Amino acid sequence: MKSFLRSKLDAIESVLMDCGHPHALASQSEGLIENAGRTDVTPGDVKARLVLLSENDQRPEVGLIAGARMKITYYGALGYAWMCAEDFESVLRIAIKYARLTGSFADFSWEIVDDSIVWYPTGKNTTHIEDSKSSAVLRDFQFCTDVTLIKQIMGSDFVPSQIVMRGKAVAHSDVYPKYLGANVEFGSQYDAIYYPKAFLKKAPGLSNPIAATDACSACESLLHSLQSQADYSYRICEIFNQCHGEFPSIEEVARTLCMSSRTLHRKLKAEGTSFMSLLQNFRFVMADQMLRTGGLPIETVARTLGYSTGSSFTRAFKAWRQASGG
Image 1 (spheres, rainbow, N blue to C red):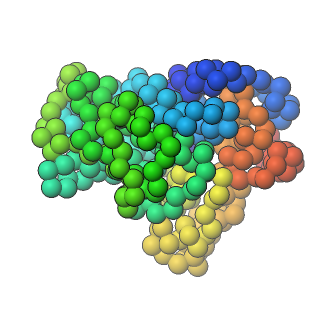
Image 2 (cartoon, rainbow, N blue to C red):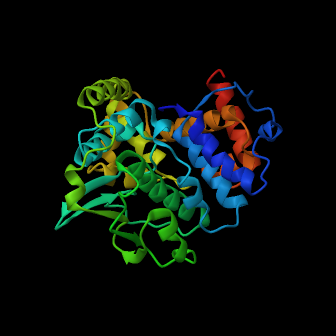
């Protein structure tokens, strides 16, 4: 799993500090694993901090607050490729091509509809809406991060013309314009951010085709490194990475991959693994990464990975560490 700059995690933890949460209590890790002093983070680290944020900050707009603190410089070569892209269309194409390098929680996409550029920050075909504060914080964070980064790339006057979200209106609807630059209409079939079609050929302030080519070459190398893993095993882990707490069954994953569960089982067997092995390893690798970063209560890590209690997670995690020789 791709690692990201520690500053991305620090931005979220600064919001935790705003609400007085003691974010760096290494003792809460119960000695399961020693803090290795890492300076990078993973998508799982970011997601776990957002879950912790939703549990400790009572402000309904806290996801927007965290998203507004993201910076394009947190994305390394990918961020540089965006900043130097030829035009906004190139920015969007680069985002889709190198989506695996962003640490996003969703399979995002874009298209032209009539006179608008439509960006789907949580995926156009996502239908399930988890009714919880943590899922609302994650969605707000994704929306605000996307709008914030696009403004940093394209300029402060580059604001959405319309924003729509699935589900019912939320209590903090009135604060969306402050963070997103537009009102939000609810009850849509999908989450979407609209920009005028005329923006498509607008160039970023730092547009430089030579620098953009160099940065994209670095992104290509990173992407190739990720794709060297077994195909179906990797695609399933990508699906797991979009989940929070409740992981899909093999039948649900098979439908997403447009095949039967029996076919998926056969393909995974050919890769020398199984669905349950992938799920177990994914959960504990994520746990290992989150605990190495430090500062997260065991209960938060457990809930992020779908365990009902910290004690049940602790037992399972120790057994996995022993089995894997850790």
